[in-house]
Image 1 (cartoon, helix red, strand yellow):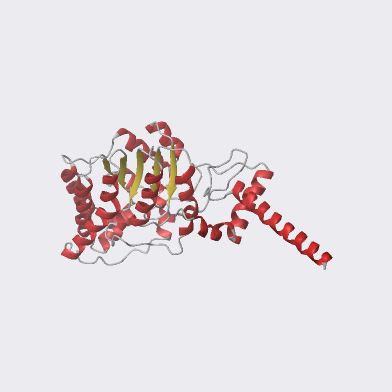
Image 2 (cartoon, rainbow, N blue to C red):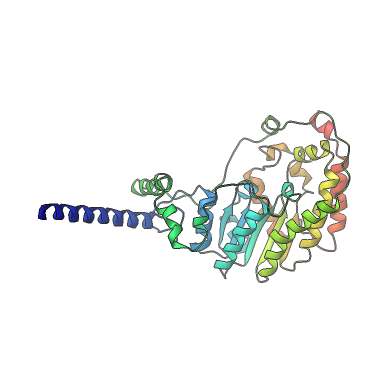
Length: 351
């Protein structure tokens, strides 16, 4: 009996020691920065945006955030730091809705009182959506809150161990370098006409031009912009928000033209523009008039996504004030752009 008790006690001691060691290892290599900022002696693989961005917001040192969809993934925080005189982090979400981006920014702003600059994409294809529209299921909400009890889903998650903890441990032991914020979520893919057209199924017949927005459409657009942009920026008046309409390629405009939706889109954009211009801490930019970029498919991998050199140019334009929309110029710019895309020779371009 005494032998059995000793054996049981020894087993419990080994088990408790193993669990304690596991928790220490997990805490040190914390792959999604849920508990602390990166340690200088650990190498980190940064790769999963929806798991990692909240930890970046919590624990990194920064006073600026670059955020947006995949249209922002190729931004380099090092370039933003040099141009704006800030210390920035990148928190992008591939395929994100306005709501997802807004909620992540809200958490970052709430946690970091030093956050004074936000660079934020405003994708044209998301304006005509419901304010609560979401594109992703299965969010790791246990990482977003401050409840320590649901962290068991993080600490005892075999996928987090395999893809995160063990990967970081191997990288550290083999002397590999951590993923930089410039590299984080970025991509380099082949661009050019052939690559764009490989994924673009062009309508052969042009649809009749759609009528204008209905009252329900106007209410939807207004609610979308108010909830996910205006209400947020108004809660943080000491932060400057650089918000810009992303410059999709001429193929996206051709798609809208073939659907008969250009005027429909521009009416929605006008609503968004006028609402954002009422926010004194918003610097609104529109790059739809960068026709030299938009009509050159060497800049694009598909009808929306531009290559990294365009991201670099956008940062330079933002810093220099190029493309800034104001109450004085927005109607003139709006009408020029609308007429350009309504009257563009799309057939000639594709021929």
